[in-house]
Image (cartoon, rainbow, N blue to C red; front, side, top):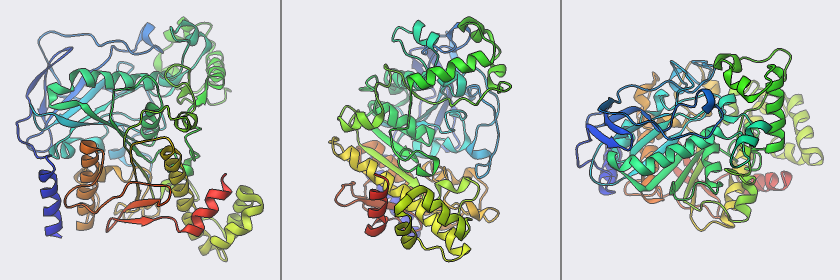
Length: 521
C-alpha cells in the first residue's frame, strides 16, 4: 500500500506537476492588485472573492454580465463572497454540510476564487462549475477546496454564477431588450464571463490560458456540456470534464443531451406566467421587487423550471443536434457517473416484486418480459436488487450511447468512468456511491469530511485526483504509476471503474447492454 501511494506521488512529479516556485502573495489583475492568503496545504495560496463581473443588481438584473469595476490599492482576497441568491438548505441527505453552500447569499455575487502553488511557469488550469440543479450552490462549497489539486500542479478556479429565477428567467420583454433577442441564460453567461476573465488574468497566478479545463458535476456537468455546444465559447477552454451529467444522469431524467435545455418558447411562456403571478406589470416593476420576494413561490401559481434555454444566441440548438452535425467545441472529454446516482430518491432499491413488474410494463411495454428475464424479481428482496442493477445498467448504456454519438463527429478522445466506491458512512449505507460522492476523491479532500476513512479511500482519492490532474495537463488521464485508462470507442465501450481496485471493464455485459440500446431507441 505504501509503495503504491509513493509511486503515485512520484508519478505526479515525473509528469511535471511538482511545485517548483513559490506561490504569489500579491498579483496584479486587470481590475487591480490582490493579496491572497495561505491555503490549507503548505505552499498553496488562495485568492478568494475576486470580482469577475459587475454586480448584477438593479437595472443589471437579468442582463448579461458587464465588466467588473476596477479598484485602487491592494484588495484583500482573503474571504469568500456571498453565494448568488437562493434558498439555503444547508444540508439535505445524502448531502451533508460539506457538499452544500453555507452562509450568506446576495445578488452581488459574481466573484471567483483561485488556488495556486506556484508562479512563473505556466500551469494547467482547472475551472470547476458547481452543481445544484441550477437553483443552488456556490464556488465556496467546502469540498471544492482546490489546495490538494494545486499541490499536484494545477491552478484551480471556482466561481459563482446566477441560479434559479435570477439566472434563468426567460421572458418576451427580456428578449425584446436584448441586442441578440435572447433571454434566460444569465447563469451560463456568467460562466462565459468567468472564462473570459481567466483568459485575461490567470497567467498572473501561474496558470496557462492556453491550457484550460472546464469541469463540473450535475448541473455543473450539464453546464460544461452546454458550453461545448455553444458557438460563443471558442478558445475559452481546451478540455472538458463532465461528472454525472447527460447520459449518466438517466436516474434524474437526463438520459440524453437533447433535454439539457428547454425551448425558448416554453421558457418565455413560463417566465411570463411567473411575472403575471406576482402582479408585475413591467420589467422595471419586476426588477424593483426585493430578491427574497422573487425566491418565494407565488400563491396558487404552478412551479417554474429555471434552467438553460435554447435562446438562439448562446445556445442555438439542442446539444444532440450540435454534436450530430459536428458543430461542438471539439476538445478531449472525460465523463462518467456514480453507481448509485438515484439513491437520493425515495424508494431506491426498495421496490416490491409486484411494483417492480408494474414499473417494467409501464416503461418497456411489450419488451417488459424480456427485461424481467434479465432482471428477475421473484421476491421483494430480488426486486430491490434488480431495481438497483437495472438503474445502474440503464444509466451506463445511456452514457455509452452519448459517447458513441460524440465519436461520430469528434476527432478528440473521450474517457469514460464508473465510480462505484461508496463513502464509508455507517449511519447511512443505503446511499451507496451517491450523486456527488466522487467529488471529495476528485479534489483529494477526504480530510474535510468526518467519515471513517480507510487506506482504500485514501489510495482511491490519490489515484482519482491524479487522473483528473493528468487529464487537465495533457488531455489524457494516463500517466506513470496509474492503471492504464483507454479512450472510449463504440466498438470497445470500455469504462474505467473507480473502486477499491481501479480497473478497466466492459460494463454492462453485452446482453444487458443490447437490451437497453434497443429498448430506448
